[in-house]
Image (cartoon, rainbow, N blue to C red; front, side, top):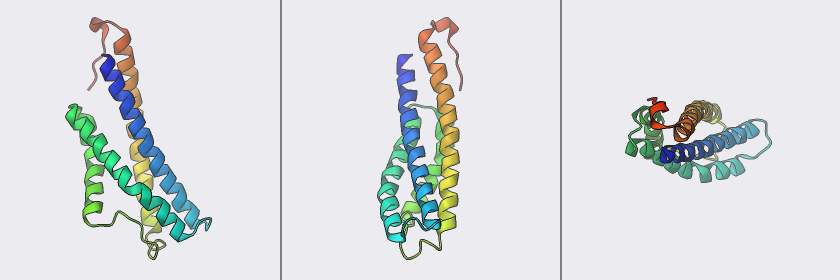
Length: 146
């Protein structure tokens, strides 16, 4: 039972990191729109975060697959497929010369990812609560969900 709590705490930390990364990228894109940052600085800051974020998200999705949390795995698969598609088409980095043309699209993409990670965070918090309750109670009073 304690392993389940540890697992969900690890998932919480990973999801929080992905949420923070998407929030930072969205704020940077908003700063570019308000002309607080130049396009070169924006693209260099965001591009250094893109590949690590992709790797962390793929590990996150794989973690659900390996631990047989099918519901959570199926929730994370569409974003993982989108990430893989961007990487294969080599559209995952922001180009300095085209940043203003794709600014609204990139902001919408980051906003969707923020909403996704936030809803995933809510599910994980519920799972942490259930795991903590189950680890503190006996087997006969344990709550099974999903």
